[in-house]
Image 1 (cartoon, rainbow, N blue to C red):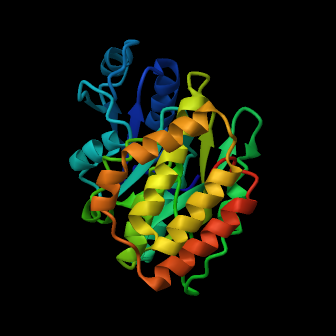
Image 2 (cartoon, rainbow, N blue to C red; image 1 turned 180 degrees about the vertical axis):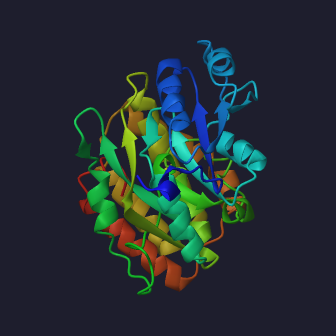
Length: 304
């Protein structure tokens, strides 16, 4: 490691949201504390009941701990970014951690490319060390971008594996409170693209993911499908919204989880239609390309 690589780097704040995953979070915080970049870390505890907040306060006094007293979902990231004083924020889940040097590399890329709002990392699954299946979708993105772009152009990002410009995040309002959690990135990404920003995948940046055993995969599937539908009706033109909704009706598993997702989506239609703001044709063409690629992706199971 060179002297420069060993020095702290004050350009990035790591933002973590957590709920009832104390062992995973403490492992992640130990890893972040040992990074050569020595990033500032902000944790939003979404109403944990397992002593998470108390353990963070005791074992990691260097961390800024936010305790809103309830489960804010992805909006906990918005709260944390309010406190960030660095130009960049690196999102991190309680079961992911950044590889040494990756935060410095991400900041260098963002420094060099002012029109890039976010860079998404290569994701390595632990303990196997294999790439997450979503990496192929990032690497083979169908979108094209300018020659100067530091990696494949993306139409969305993964909140657990992305470094973003804090001012760009704030300018579009962060994560939408209506979506709460589950595929919440798609709407934020589209609003960034609409403002002329670029998103890209940079394989030289790496994050590790050891999936927490404490998760309700069915509940997350319900939320993800509901939010896919809400995003579709918030931002896609009418023909595309109708087509994608019909595709999802035909192709998702016909089970109780899907029925719950569609019921929740229908219940939210009044606010969704009030806030509906379809994207212009040039951006819709890019979203249509992404939709087609997602249908072919082995990393997707229930979204169109």
